[in-house]
Image (cartoon, rainbow, N blue to C red; front, side):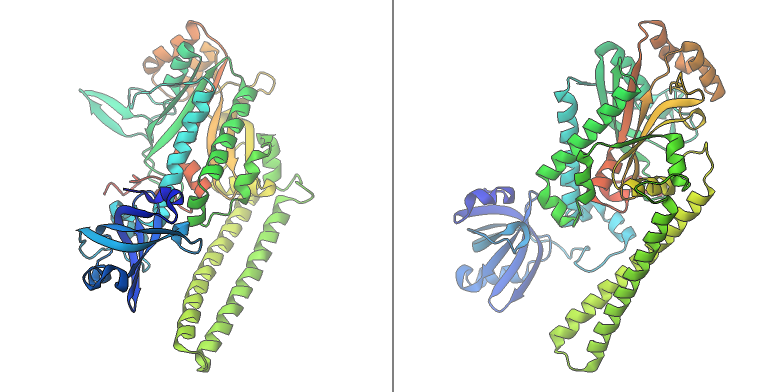
Length: 505
């Protein structure tokens, strides 16, 4: 048996494939089937004169997602899905499917999410999951290549990194316990034993939020490094992201093509990242500081003007096509083609209107931003749009960072933390920094954050026995997948998303 991913090695040869009928159409004496086997997609051409009437009739009536085995010759054809075609000589049905609920027509998001167990079979979702897989492999390649040891933090915890207000609480043999929101504190302990470690596991946040960037269960990559300061931490973050994105660009060209991903911004990741302190970043957001000769508000007004021009062009295209349809001069095929284009163009108008609303929100947020505040999604978007590439913002006000962040000795009131903001509106994908080593400061911070001191006694031990400077960071896998794939919503980045209001399938 041959796999679709290996067809390049079998051009001109007879092969046998086993898979599913993803879609098909037929004409006189021919059935054109989009065949999938999990490793890829290809076109299978079933000719009446070749396979005979019995097999041809079976192929013609075969429902979507029926499983079958086909034999045939491999032909290279770049115009076809996957770049290859199978000229079928024989076929055998393995299991005939019932009426498949997900058809080529448009479906609502709720319907697709209710049928996520089936939606995963679509070509787009297939591509996303393949990119996710390559990202995961690249993460392990990077850290293992640098001598890091993968270690695992517990999922049940008796304490919280940043308070318990957004944690899932459960009963643990009569004691309250929480599903972990981060493995970082345990990572620090493991780094004191192994020097360089990383954890990679599920984490949980009980935020009642339905934004496009939130999940209740997601996967985190959290390295911790002994003897690392903030600069070394930022250097590692940059190398790490460049390595992972580079691996996807070199290995997932077909998947990115399926997703129609414009890789322009991904290619810019190989350039040195922009690094700036929080206060300088705020000055850019507020329009007080120019970047390449323009302020944030000039950039945003340019965005508005472009969208107006784009809207007018689409409206004109719609008007011209609708006039052609009404003229009575077009053939049936031409009418259908133009009507299909009009429907797609109207969808573009909806998208343009949403982007126009987003720009207005960015302008409002920038005008009302107060120094000392944390960044919201709009603020992150404005900042990265000014540079068009990843931006590292460091030295944040201590009030907006976690209790374990180290205060900058030369910049009092600011924590030695860093956020990496991805371009194209994807915002924060990495958060990290240097950890506080002063045990008395840690104690006061624990009290200030109203956390139970008893739950952190073991954590304070790390400062009593072999205390050293150390740093780390956390990266949310699903946010990275969303950015690299160019997805509008994080729900597509994980096989079975768990978010506010959704527990099934």
